[in-house]
Structures are given as C-alpha cells and as structure tokens.
Length: 97
Image (cartoon, rainbow, N blue to C red; front, side, top):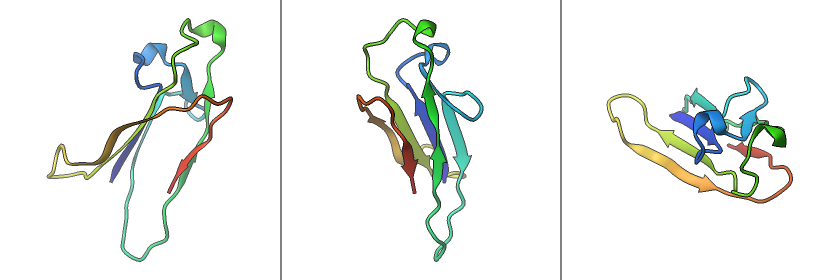
C-alpha cells in the first residue's frame, strides 16, 4: 500500500501551520509492504504547531488526511482517502496500525 499523511491539508503548502518533527515537512509518504500472517505494522509520527508569529490564521481547524492506495497497475484505486480528521485540542498524537 502507498500511505500518505497530509497535515493542515486545506492550506497551501507554504502556509501550513503544522509540520512533522522529523524533516519539518507537512506531509509523509511511505510504501507499506503487507503480508498475510505478519503482525500489524504501526508508525508513530510526531507533529508540532509552528510559532503563532509565523502564521495569521489562528481560528480555522487543522485538517489532517490519510490516504491508502494500492500501487501498481490500478491507478486511482483508493482504499481509504481524503478523510479529514479535525480536533480542537492542545496537542494531538496520531498513530495508526
């Protein structure tokens, strides 16, 4: 599966307010190899909110999206995509497995 996480997806790339701690990017992409009988595969990612002085919009929610796509000969076959997760909390930890 091709997995892609987008942080603050509704904002233009240069205006995104949330970045991943590793690499300081607003998106994460990984090819996941799944095989029958293997234990679940989990990834934990840590994100941070940029300093308030770096952006103007402090009221709109931060929208996150995760998409899972079958790679290869089936372009456009999305198993799980364009789902937005919104929460108004001080800090959020995302993990999935």
